[in-house]
Length: 355
Image 1: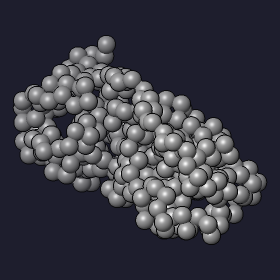
Image 2: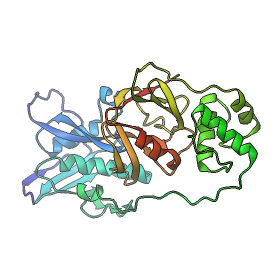
Image 3: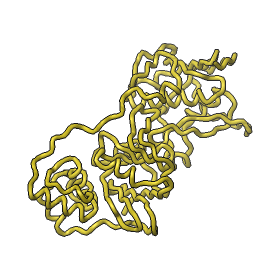
Image 4: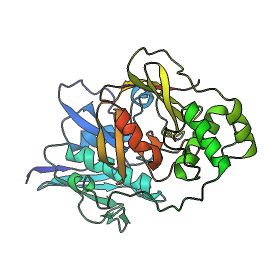
């Protein structure tokens, strides 16, 4: 256990902002922001827990924000008192830090606080107070009234989700024809044509409707049936040469999986919502993680393909037709494993704002 006789008292009502005229120092502390579904530590000048909190409340720089870094600490947050003793940092925040917050945003802010203070050698755990009192609230299995460790936040407390139960409809000729057309266009795979309408066909229809600018019904309606008869297969937006790559079309909410400059599959996705957008740019898949745990949001992200920080392709139970994620590229369980198997570490990923 770390032990330190450090006590830092901050004046009531004093915001932790960068100190004017601070002398540049070679010593640095780490501050925890978010990039997608994971924490991202950045360096700031400082030497102690108070310096780390000062950097946390100042928020990401403009350049970091443009690169996808976000903070869930609400503006107006102040630190009333901070002590570090026997490995426990006690952070007394004003009520603004915890009041009226949705669970996911509060959990993210608390995790940022814990990760920031825990990055200092003197700290093992964090006790959160609000206006001098314990926070009597449990969020995603975490009691905010007890000291919190980063290890606890990083430990899964729920099982990996499985696919939902679904009973397929009986085969019919119209569905079989649509499935064959979707296979020809690259929205379904060879072998998917069984004439039975289910989640896989629905996802393929939705991807087609998104790419073609049709009403997003996820069913084979009259307009979709007519468009399928005359549509051409999607082609890459950019030229990439031989090999595998992916293009994420933010305006269409579609991802194109490409091999040797030919689209082999187009899938429906949900990217980052306006407050946490998926940043346009050129990246590469840097890992393949079959079961990724989100810290701080405490949820499973199966079949994850991270390509910049904590921003990744991954399976998710809820994939709306609009941008809704924390920056990641959500996919239905019907396609996520295929994308995972298709991808390679080092595979280029291009995020495009418009076609």
